[in-house]
Amino acid sequence: MARRSRQAKHIVPKRGSHVYYLLQYAYTTEAWRALVENTTQRDRAGAIRELLRKFDACLARIDFECAPHPHPTEKLVLAGDHDVVAFAAFPNPRAATAFSMAVLATGTVKYFRATPAVPMRQAIEAMELAGAARRDTLLSYRGPGEKR
Image 1 (cartoon, helix red, strand yellow):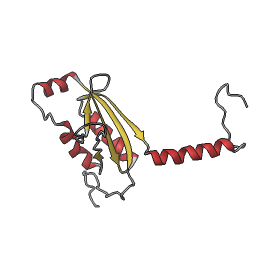
Image 2 (cartoon, rainbow, N blue to C red; image 1 turned 180 degrees about the horizontal axis):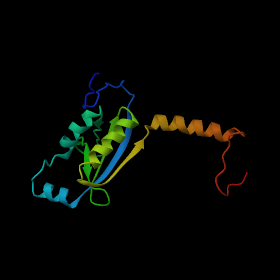
Image 3 (spheres, rainbow, N blue to C red; image 1 turned 90 degrees about the horizontal axis):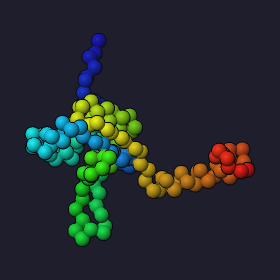
Image 4 (tube, rainbow, N blue to C red; image 1 turned 135 degrees about the vertical axis):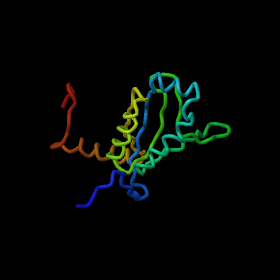
């Protein structure tokens, strides 16, 4: 009987076949202590990149066209409800879910959210589909309290 490998399978996704997610998370007090006291890798983009590769995923590089010298950034550190936000591309929702589980399993993140993000072209196509469904009297949907 063949033994199953414990390593994740690496499937090279087709170009353009990724699904995108907005990642938002907050570190635990202990994680912040390690970052402040320099007892852990401070470049968290570098640290997370290796984990993302296990799922055939990657971080987005974001630049701001209004900045005088745009420097692409991969993660943004915030002061607020979320300590970090980033965009990532995954080959499928299962990989995004597994990535989320792997991050949460470290115990160093107290809050983690992965919100699907749709490129504008696909959002417009979805709007057209929704508009067609609304026009179809058999499939029209009325919200609570909406008049017919």
